[in-house]
Amino acid sequence: DNVERIKASYRSAGYYNSKVVPILKRMGRHKRELVFMIDEGGQTRITKVTFSGNKHFSSSVLAKQVKTKPYFALTSWWTDAGIYKKSETDQDVQRLRNFYLNNGYINIGVGQPKVVFTHHRKSMTIVFPIQEGEQFHLGSIAISGNKLFSNKRLLKAVKLKPPMVFSR
Image (cartoon, rainbow, N blue to C red):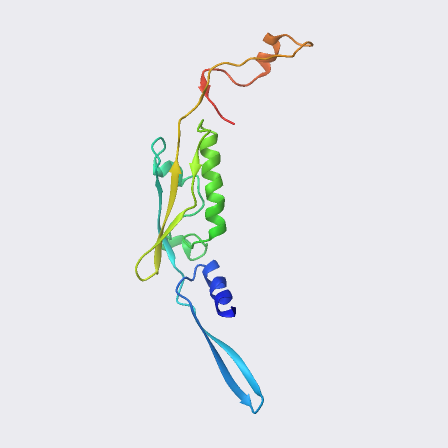
């Protein structure tokens, strides 16, 4: 439906209060004009970005890993910070996964962000659900199958030094 496609376009730009009304105008005996009357309704701003389920890293540490940020009047007028973009939050999910994987959390689960609107839909909170799992540590390094070089020489070339947090 055309109305829904127009509204979806507005939502993708952060306009969650837009209204689209199709009006069919008579232009002559056998001619009609279809006009879409649009009330943009103003952009819905992100007022808060939170994380649920995080135990090992604070929300402030995790907030530095994502690009989705709350609206800030002094800078958001010339950037698009504080405006919800699904593509951005999808990338933030991957950024959070990478952060946890690089810090030893092999079984990390980062769910799709939950969008919580205020009752008038003029602002929203974004919640990233996290299931950390356990942190893994590298206990030892073994080398096998080598004939050309000694284990000692190859182990010197390896940058990993147990015990340390496993990082992919």
